Amino acid sequence: AQSVTQLGSHVSVSEGALVLLRCNYSSSVPPYLFWYVQYPNQGLQLLLKYTTGATLVKGINGFEAEFKKSETSFHLTKPSAHMSDAAEYFCAVTKNQAGTALIFGKGTTLSVSS
Amino acid sequence: NAGVTQTPKFRILKIGQSMTLQCTQDMNHNYMYWYRQDPGMGLKLIYYSVGAGITDKGEVPNGYNVSRSTTEDFPLRLELAAPSQTSVYFCASRPTGGSPYNEQFFGPGTRLTVL
Image 1 (spheres, rainbow over the protein chains, first blue to last red):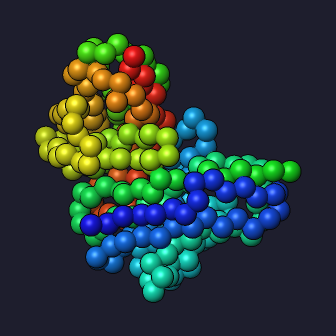
Image 2 (tube, rainbow over the protein chains, first blue to last red; image 1 turned 90 degrees about the horizontal axis):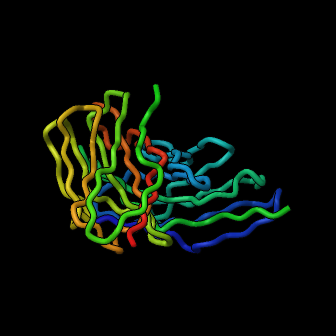
């Protein structure tokens, strides 16, 4: 079975500081990994995804994530936080099987202070 | 394209009432999903569909029913509402072709309260 663990339900950073949101996964097959962002009272929007190939993945809004198979991790980073980054972030995994849905972590709320 | 649309945006139900949450997508996606989101719990899959006429249970299907008569529509039915069904419900769809790493597109959600 697949699962996702997001370490830290709430992360607070100052504007301009490094953002690091942690995600570890469990999968018996090669996973496909995703980060989604949810702004208040909105649906989820894809930030980036890892499928195969390059392990460092770049997404929208300056975010990137690195797939580390040996550590079963897919941490999300951004070099410099902006106030507009305040949102809830979800890590998700799926497997290479048609029709399968995403399995989500519990989410991490990012707060950015000025 | 409007993408994935959901109605209503908000609803308050009394225990035992029934209702249908509507979901429509105009992207000709075969795959559609219903998730519920509870605080601190992430999103859980309720039901999904791989095409018109084909549906299957997800992780938390009890108390819900779905149908898929067209490619565009995937309604979620609550027959006997219970307080445990208070949640935010998201509908999502994925492009035709079935590649699991294709992006899922989410609707704006329906916030349901059962009192």
